[in-house]
Length: 83
Image 1: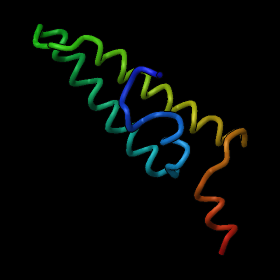
Image 2 (image 1 turned 180 degrees about the vertical axis):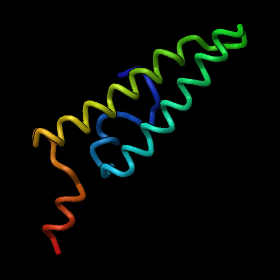
Image 3 (image 1 turned 45 degrees about the horizontal axis):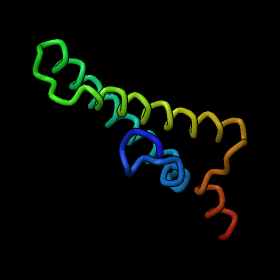
């Protein structure tokens, strides 16, 4: 089992279109910023969350890069072909 958010597994990310992935990436980066700030001020309770969020960001970037290289299919493209 991968460490990270349960809703950001590779299977779940495969179903998201690029806009949703960009939105999830933005949220994850904001959370990482807040966690780093909490860590710097000594207020962070769960240090493992930093690692989990970094891995979530890496997963999102992996899916986006694989779609750009046509390694992984984009679900938005499949919907357009059905029309």
